[in-house]
Length: 236
Image 1 (spheres, helix red, strand yellow):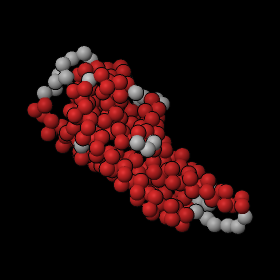
Image 2 (cartoon, helix red, strand yellow; image 1 turned 180 degrees about the horizontal axis):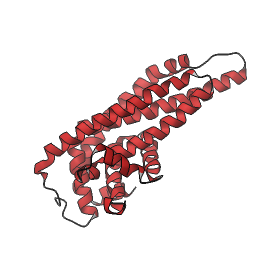
Image 3 (cartoon, rainbow, N blue to C red; image 1 turned 90 degrees about the vertical axis):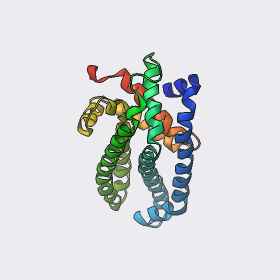
Image 4 (tube, one colour; image 1 turned 45 degrees about the vertical axis):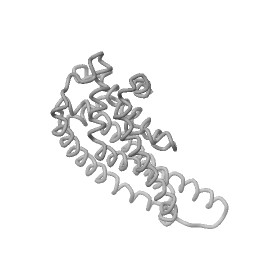
């Protein structure tokens, strides 16, 4: 919400937010089309079958949990893809967000001359995070093979891991500008206590809400930047 207020108050940021917005429009449209077209039948194949109304009720409950968990994973994957494709716009947007939040001119304290170098470094670290995320989440899919309880455990763990990685992903901009390695960024986010869960869950919920999710990339990037400014490295 603070990111939205800042964006609304500074119309010169709108062009930088427009490109990620329209990119998200395309990505989420594609994601939900694929989900509705193929995901339901695939999930039903993972869940056990049985007779009776109570079994049908359990089946639909588990179906909802698994679909929600898989959509959560999907949101992270599309957030990573969106970040990579719109990296120059989001990098500039967060630089100027940080400058405006600190009362500095929007071009300070970083010149745009090193933008290409910074974007390439961000892309490399995003790829590393994606590999780690998939290395965690793909084995967790096997939990769905456990009748009943497996789907519930998977849904909970998928939410927690995805919230953590989303917090890490969208707080990456100010942390990367301070020269932190991926290990140091992870340590910083873990040091926030439950702050990473609150921020990551907010991004997740935003991604699950139709229409609102189109603004996910610019607002999450601005929100992560503002959250860092509340707890800079010197006080962590």
